[in-house]
Image (cartoon, rainbow, N blue to C red; front, side, top):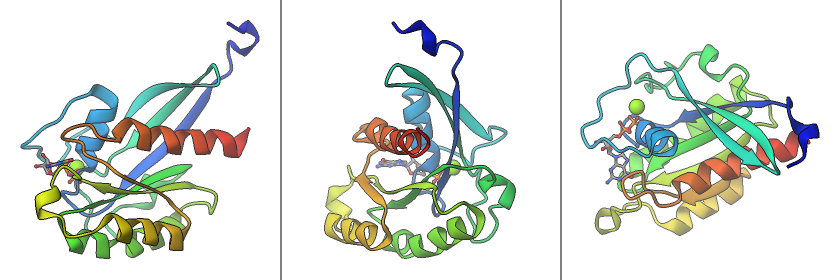
Length: 177
Ligand code: GDP
Ligand code: MG
């Protein structure tokens, strides 16, 4: 181990945004605690969770914020976005309306955050293949258009959850180092 790195600290604020019930809270609980809740109520009290990730031997703290049920358009306050350096913009692959909302969520990000914010488009619930309403190609092409990373995830069966967060965290790290 390189002891010169001891004492160096990174804290990255990352926000989760997207329509209600797309799985934001479960993506966070899967990532931070490896838990899934089938009957998840609106998150109460918990504003964010911190997860430590190691990148190039350095300890990075990812402070991930959850909307606590304020997803109604424009109800997420600027305090929520303040200081964010990364964002996961989430839709539900089984509900097209949540995909149609993505452009508005991206506008909100543009209004409230620096242009350098690392952004990942996340199509969650990819386990629901049988009732899919948004194709992978549509997700990919929107991401390309908007210059976002893209990944389909499942908080239920854990597909890509770790990877999605880690790509964003790495991108933030690369931006600053
Ligand atoms: P939020 O409102 O965006 O925070 O969404 P929640 O995390 O509360 O999830 C809303 C509902 O979708 C809950 O009933 C979850 O159990 C369910 N859910 C979340 N993620 C997934 C997933 O990846 N697959 C499936 N099948 N259901 C999910
Ligand atoms: Mg929630």
